[in-house]
Length: 444
Ligand code: UDX
Image: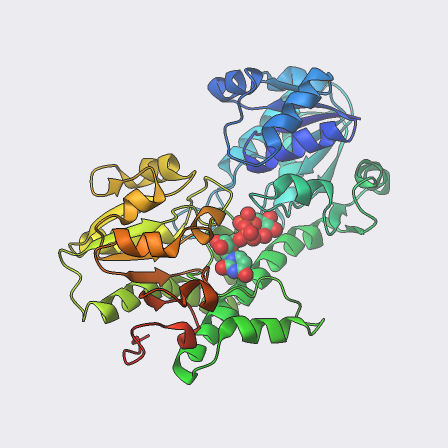
């Protein structure tokens, strides 16, 4: 099939490359000519394992192209996929300006029947509204499809080529059948539903996953008080098929471009129809607070006095294997420390540059290597569970730190890793692993 993907952000780029990999002809469009030049030079503007190689192969084999010329891409395609950003407005609602603009430009370029598909996450009812907008700008026939995206950064290709399910929201059976055909090689689990339900499935799924994370984080906080181990609790819970083992890792809370944005948007969507989504509000509140557990633990070991301390931070990305720092808990943790007179040294294997661009370079000592970051620090906080940190030599680490204080925000280290060390160690919801501080129970 001939496909145009509008927007070369995460979703657009990964989807475009993967549709090409399935044997379709794909043109990816972006209105930023620098991005298009970069892509045409074989560079990928985001960090996503395997994407660069897959894009290169598909370009070489003539199935994938990049252009800033939206009209010609639309003219040469039967399926148009809108994958532009819907970033949050200050009130939590999704900003639909980019998708509205893209829809108008597509409409103005249309030369024949098209299937217009929305992959961007949009509030319930948006697809219908976009269809009306398109109708105002063209008299050519088209059908609308809602095709929510569930890929995770860091495993985006795997998630796209082997998804758990494909959701197709459609009003027209013929268009739905074409979309089913397109996605058949990926999975047997294709759910065809109405457009509004498809839009809702995306928000409900992300809200549910966010709920699981906040739930286990609260269980972790209780574990710290009652002497249980949250990793054991999650393991025991996960065998129940109704619960399942995934998304039960306690830590410093979720971040990234989706969960924070989609949970706020769903609270707004409910609010707009006079429904208060109380459960989801609590999920967001718990998540917001969870990152400060790291600070509370630091305060416990320093008897409340943070001023003048040197604190090393390992991990800035909102999760490993990505350079994405959007809504990363590290942002607020570091800001708090800086505001309270702490000298912060920070390192991330990949996300240093994206973090600096959000944070400003002045206030923090940015480092290029893990042990160098820890050198002469009064404490080390691990905020992102990169593999590199898990395999560090802890005795070596202990030597370079001024004080062997380790706050593990992601439960990276196990009991056997710590056994021969003298660390003052805190993790999340595993009080029995606390070392050197058994008498000091952090105030949560
Ligand atoms: C998420 C959804 O998984 C994906 O389906 C949707 O399309 C986009 O949002 P992503 O944001 O890439 O994907 O990351 P994900 O791997 O889901 O992790 C989200 C956040 O939750 C991360 O900050 C991660 O550290 C945190 N998390 C995840 C936990 O704290 N505990 C867990 O058990 C799982």
